[in-house]
Length: 301
Image (tube, rainbow, N blue to C red; front, side, top):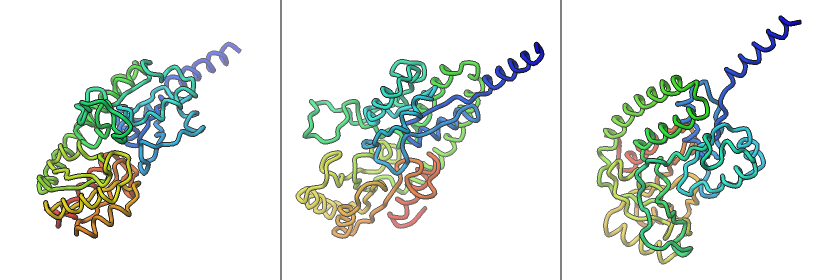
């Protein structure tokens, strides 16, 4: 009987030691990065799909259960995924509330762009008081995101720090090589004038040297008005802006009309892993977007 008890105790201890850390992320890009840092020591689920507008993800009961089971919650932050607040509250999971060891704000340490300097009100559209939240679209920020994830995983599972760090450095080496590749590929795009549907691509444009000429939306989150569209068309014709970028989840009627009126090329792009068929990873996003822009410009280098 005693030997049976000892065997069961050893089995329980073994299963506990090898249990995977449960990680929940608010986006598919954070999911992929968390999987790279966590490796086979973590199980990661995303609360959103790559084809969703992250401003308007609808919380569901199934999401509450995911958060309830989580040891670590990784968020974009900067008020983009505020919808996750209700999920954390409903889950009553104290491990992932703000300030808890399992709470990870992936934006910590990122150089934020477009921080409002004036008072923000509803008439300014979907403006974020802490700065533009689309920072993951500069792939160089992936190292900061990964560092924040690493710290969160180590807080949750200190005994596995060495393994997490090994995975982290492997990711950074791969990222370094991809950044070199992307910079070389993007060289012909420097100075190219681009119109975007939503004000999502400021970090991307700064990284790769594109000139953001304007947005189809008159203000972030507001539908385009005829007067705004007509003014934009006139400016595009005058200045020669020949590319329009729109994420796959936005309505394309207005963007297509502007493209028809100006002769610009409309490029439908993913902003996250899973945003279009074949875009399975965070790295795939930049491969796809750069290839699409180069094609719209008139061919790859």
